[in-house]
Image 1: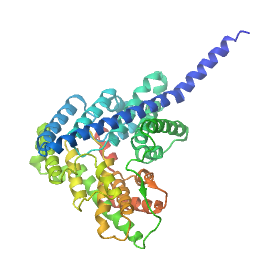
Image 2 (image 1 turned 60 degrees about the horizontal axis):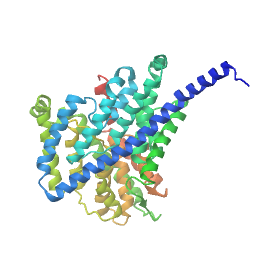
Image 3 (image 1 turned 30 degrees about the vertical axis):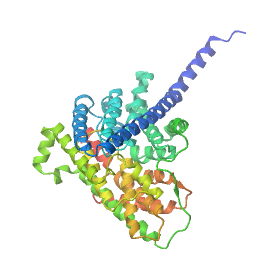
Image 4 (image 1 turned 90 degrees about the vertical axis):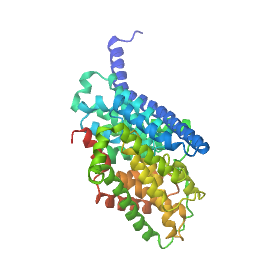
Length: 435
């Protein structure tokens, strides 16, 4: 029996609608997961190479880091403008004004530049992470898939399709970077949009899950910094520790945000003019600053801080109370030149260092417990997104006995941070929005 032509056409139209509504998002999510995993391995390879070289030549960072910093600034400004920093401010700016900023901030060229220059930066020992860049890369990749949609759909509601693609790509990028799909959902709600639209929530969540599944399949069921094992015993001083860590990490994170947002207030006028007139040379000077700190700290401030944070959690890394201060100084030096790099992993490492240092005060508490509180506190202070910080850290906990304490620390630290500076990513996004 012959099938009527109108049924064929209706089936084709229905299939096309399903493809546009779900298929494009899922395809982009799978691609984001694959790129996130390959990018993570590239960054690990770059930093491992740096460590192998510096183990042989301790003085090499004094030459290598300034040279790479200068080249990174030059190539970013010359070929990849818009790829600087973590990339999250660019995504936020695009979500506010997608029709104008999307074609400039979320392109394949920027995707390539983000990966390439951040690889060079980690090869030079910069204090950067890969999570923010992965978010930017995911958003750029998904945004490029808008070409599958006809122009009439892209123009509806001020570019709603393009905005949803970028949002899904950014959230999927975080999901794949941390192997934490729930963190991707929360990040999309809390940091990127400050809202959640019901008609797009299902597609967004499935895109995040697809990216997480790809990451899980290629990297296994791992937790980012390992598993934090707690025995369920909570000392009487836990409440005091939560308050103190919330305040200390809030002040530290708030100062860090203030330093990045108010360079005109603390940097000498001559240095500001030098930064503006000779950005490449200024980048080299920042690289030398990073190298000097790193060499003086025995190499512990180089890179994202992943190994140091994991070592503190496992109890075999002996770092002094100066580690978080030196790491934060190196982190500021890594971001002043404008090279691509993320804030998440270094912030978690600094928070771990603060928790480790305060173990001298709370010697009766389990060290992993203090480190977990410090990690969630400092990350919440820097991002001023306490729920996202809480979800990222809670997925590293073996069990949920510390849930309320982590949540309280994140809320306290984010509120304290607001006394020093506005939300960092939103403030940086205004630069791209003309604010």
